[in-house]
Image 1 (cartoon, rainbow over the protein chains, first blue to last red):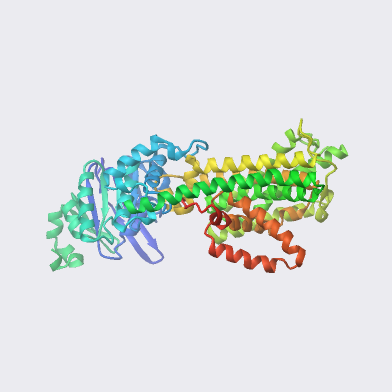
Image 2: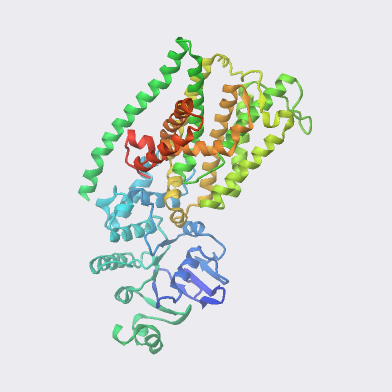
Length: 250
Length: 341
């Protein structure tokens, strides 16, 4: 645990009487792809919000790269290398795909308060942004406004924006949500290329994706982690079957 | 993909042509019409154009936060008023010879534009900083209400200043002195104001394309996303709010000088509303649209007002039609530039 890149320690989040996150201690190691699964209402979204800095936990702490980041906001965590993608594509819809990614590059370089030079002519932003777009397979779509991209493409752009800041850890909130079979297969292939290069915490519904990609899986039920282990161990775990997966899913 | 690009490229070029045509035509009118009016012995129209151009500066400054930044400030006239009152009060003390303050430092009145104007702009910027610091913690309706509340506070402060005329406003004996220009000359003053408008529009156009501007426009489209990629958005919005406040203060300075008079009406909430109407009518997020909006508003006020005192009953429906049918207002209808955020 000592050298985990990201770790939560006894994280608790309560909304009134409801405990959405219950004494959760999770970790993601360098280069690891750790998947979090769980039925609807298990607290996955609440967990992502706390890790990203959008929601403050009731108690417990979050450590990232050796520092306590519990008190940091979303922007500060992003600048430390904790990049997230949203479950529902969250983009600057009027800007082109390239503009969106260039902004993410700009954010990481801290080049915000420059008032004179035209940002769209700044190759220091555009070149890396184009490279990331090519990496996620959107090279030919760079000038299309983000709001006009197809659903699958918007998910790819989500991922590109997270990648653009050269993050140490990717926090991916259901990157396959709402995708058809073909798009999902492409996304799985894409995530496989990112494995090892980045530590990834993958929150996902799609079981095929999770078992194909994950090094380690944690199962969340009612805010509590009922099992953590390698995919084979999770597949065999009786408690997990009872609580969540169901006989036919395996 | 190809069809999207093919579909968007030619209209974009055509739109740029019509934008250039609009700019040339508009600038020609602004340069030549007051000159003609002066030569024909119609100084009223020089004053009218002066007022249009000054309101245009205020509207363009509002567009920076309203159109590009998505911040619906309902108190923008407060900054115009601060610029105007600093100019008026310093002029008052210059005329009376009495010091403005004696402790802890002695401040004398002044008519010197090189002193008065920077001071007025700085004070408007400072007010925008303080108001923005609080208001920008909120968004949506709450932001509209808080900016309105701050502006009303300043409005009543000004009314309470009996020494400076209270509700009646404050007469200025003379315009600021801006060596070597003679601002007392109607036409010289007009061309100075016009040059400032051109500079302000050019500055805003440049600003919104800069690194800072891209962040500001991104915040309007999706602030949560901007924070998620690492931008502390509050600071960027605050910076834009201060820049807009400073430019509105500049408009206030010019307003005070143009009418040789400052009045609480210059910072009433109705004036803030008029500025919003000018921006929306002309086209939000275009920087040039608000100039059209200011011109259209003041000309319609004059034209319709000559038929009836209830001119707003006619103006209202016209505004509704333009907002409904012309995306991006008059500017969108005339130049039709596709939006890019």
